[in-house]
Amino acid sequence: MRPLIWFSRLLEGESGQLFVKKMPACKIVDLAKSMAKAITGREDYPIKNVGIRPGEKIHEVLVSEEEMRRAIETETHYVICPHEDLAQPKLMRNIIEYTSNNTEMLDEEGIISLLSAEGWV
Image 1 (tube, rainbow, N blue to C red):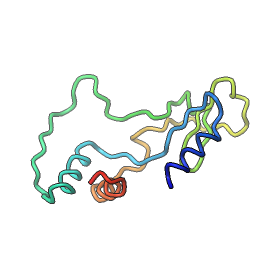
Image 2: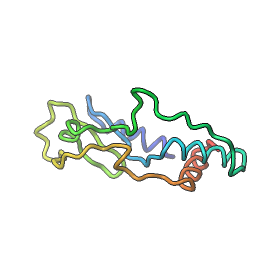
Image 3: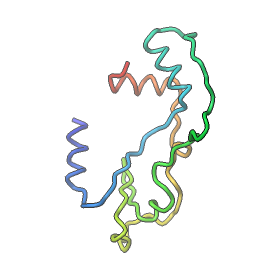
């Protein structure tokens, strides 16, 4: 059922609009631990932390501050309008980026639950 809902939203969209889904984030180390636990059943599965590499991002910017100036917020998405649509009254005026740092962070239990629901584990 979910793919049909997503498809109908795409049909309602206008040319040039960009849809960014609102979703929770997690730390890579928590994802690795959760997947290891869910797949093997072991709490102590060995995970090697290699650290942050040069140029690696700590947080992902999903909707930039500039894009937020021309975004419409729905319950499940941010709809970023093309530059020509700046006169729309529904556009967001509170200019805050949408990043992996300022959205809901999943804990290990939440990660396993989401992975299970999507058929990954």
